[in-house]
Image (cartoon, rainbow, N blue to C red; front, side, top):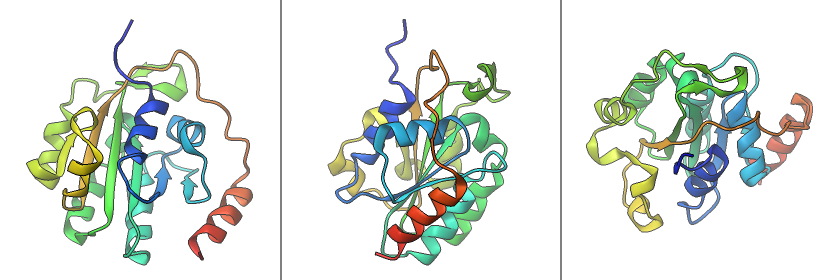
Amino acid sequence: MSNLPSQKDAIAAALALYPTRPFAVSDIGSQTGWLKAASHDARNLYVSGPMGLATSVALGLAAVRPNEQVLAIAGDGALAMNLTSLATIVGAKPKNLSILLVDNRVYEFTASVPTPTRDMDWLAVGRAFFGADQCMRLADLTPERWAGVSRPAMIVADIAPAPAKPPALGMTPAMIRLEFLKASKA
């Protein structure tokens, strides 16, 4: 039995690092289901469509909401499909964007097929893009320490593979859009 946190618990812990609830953009699949289970909020944007776009969508949101914190929640398999988004984020230098990379080394939503990046050192990858002071493990963070981290930044959370698929979202894309638009106008 693993002593690693679940994806749901890692997402909840990352959100708890912020004094005010950030906008949260989750990747399609398990990140969406576990974000909703961990902390359903109108400020959550549950991305559907191609895998790996949470970081790109979050960058756009950070650009139009510069006074609000934005957290992209990406799985290890999903971020591998859009690794170039990290270079774009570094180039854009958003002062309000962070990434939570949840690493369980499998495509959880597709029957736990191992990811081709299962042996990748995501902390080293994050540090290569963002720097050593802007990329750290979730287990090493406190709200006080996180408050002092410059953005853009990346949090790496080693998590246990889930024994089952995440709970169903129970929302249509139209419902997600309407709820998010109301929250983003506030």
